[in-house]
Image 1: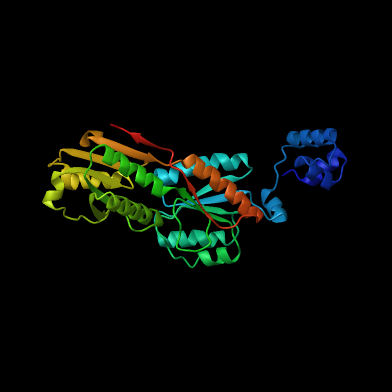
Image 2 (image 1 turned 30 degrees about the vertical axis):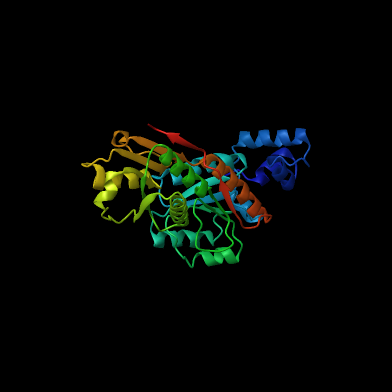
Length: 316
C-alpha cells in the first residue's frame, strides 16, 4: 500500500500540513523537525503524488519542445542545451515530434490547450497557419519560438542574427576569390527568406554576379556562369551537396567554394575552400529558457531576440 502524508503524520506525531511543508523544505518548519520528517519519509519509501500536487499549484513543472525531427542540428542542439538549463531552474523538458506533418503538429498544439505543460518551445519547419494556435494565444499560454518566426504577430522568438552571419560568409567567399555566387534557398520559413534577401542585397551592392535557385528545384545554369570562380551559399550542407552532384561532379570550375550554416559538406575534397557559420545554440537556448520563465511569471512582453553567430570556421 502506498505511504501517504497521513501515515507519516501519525508516525511523526505532527499534523499533515507540517509533513507537507517539511517534505518541500519549507522554512516555516524547524530544521530539526524537517530532518526528522524527511528521514522517516525515506525509511517508509514515501513517493509524492505529483498529479495531486500539480492540481493544487496549477503547475506541472514540465515544458514541451515541439520539433519536426532530431536529425537537424538546428533542432537537436537547442534541445540538448535547453534540457540542461531548465533542469537547473527546476523544470523538465519533454521533446515532442511532429515529423513535418501538419495534422500531428495541430494535434500537439491542441494538447497544449489542455495544460499538459506550463509552456512550450517550438521550432516550426513549416509555417502552418494552425487554428490550434488561437486558443493558446487567447489564453496567454507561454510560447517561445526558436530559430524561426511563425506567421503571427506579437510572438516571442529567439534566433540567430542571420543578416550578419550571411554577410560574414559572403565576405569570406569574396576574399577567397569568388566572383560568381549560387544562392540556394528554401522559401518556406522566415529564416530562409531573410538569408536570401540579405545575400541578394549584399551581392548587388558589391556588383557580384549571382543566381538564386530554390533548394527543391533544379534550375539549369548558363554555361558561361559555370566558367568563373563559384561560391555555393546554402542554409544546409544538404543543399550544397545536391547542387554539387547536379552541376559540378563532372565539370569543375577553377575555384569552387562552399558556404553553409552549422555543418560542412560530407566530402570536403569536392571543394577548394569551405566556410561554415556556426550558430550559438547554447546562448539561444539559455536566452529562450530565461524568456520562458518570464512568460510563465507574466512579466515578459513579446519580442524577437537575435543572438550573434558563434563563429565562422574554415574547413580548408
